[in-house]
Image (cartoon, rainbow, N blue to C red):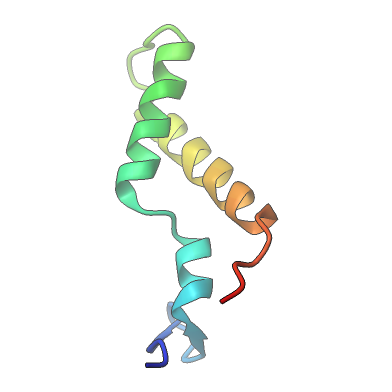
Length: 71
């Protein structure tokens, strides 16, 4: 069964789900990493968005660098 394609936000261009998952790490992974980043920085108040965006960026970069999985 082929993976469904989803529209990339606002572009009308269809992208395979695998490309979307690389671009958008799952929320649980981002939350866990953001929490670890927050702890490592000494739990500063008001840094939640900074930690979240950094975690998203780090996970995207990590996934882009992973070799493709062969079937």
